[in-house]
Structure formats: structure tokens, C-alpha cells
Image 1: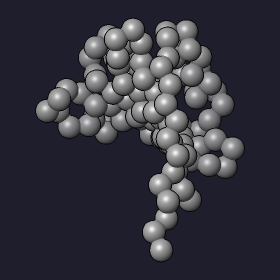
Image 2 (image 1 turned 60 degrees about the horizontal axis):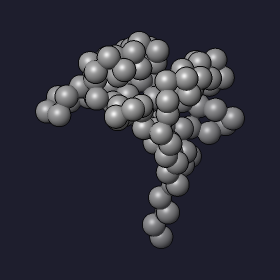
Image 3 (image 1 turned 180 degrees about the horizontal axis):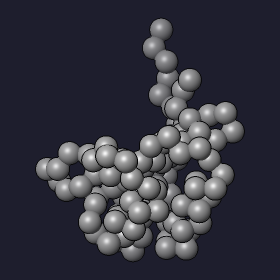
Length: 97
């Protein structure tokens, strides 16, 4: 039998909410990895990077997206941040174990 897909959560974040999210992830979770997506034809960069540094690159337009994989409260999560007009789009998914 096929496992159902996990639910996605989406939100539009302003600068203050994004800063609070980064602060919470850095202090309240165990970050497993951070991956940045460069340009339309550029592959994801998997070299080690910090979440706050990657988000700064996102806000400056140096990268198109940031994905952070982390553990919180016994579950693994993935947050994808994408730059959009007027803010950042967050897509969150809880990974099945």
C-alpha cells in the first residue's frame, strides 16, 4: 500500500516574521543541513552553510531559495524559503519516519 503524502503548510512571511523564524530555528531545533538554490539553471549548493547566512543571501537576491532540514520535538521537518515580491514564501513539511 502506498503511504499518503505528508501535509504541506504554506505562509507568506514579512521581514520581522522571517527574522523570528530564523531565530527560532537556530535556538529551538537541531539543524541537520541547509541547502541553497542559486539560479534558474544552477544546481543546489550542498556545501556547508549557516541558516542566517543563507537567508541573508536570499534577501539580497544572491540565491533563489533556501531549504533547511531540522529536528524538532522528535520529528524531522523541511522548510523551504523562496523570495517573492514583498517578502518570502515558506513551505513546510513534516517528514515521515
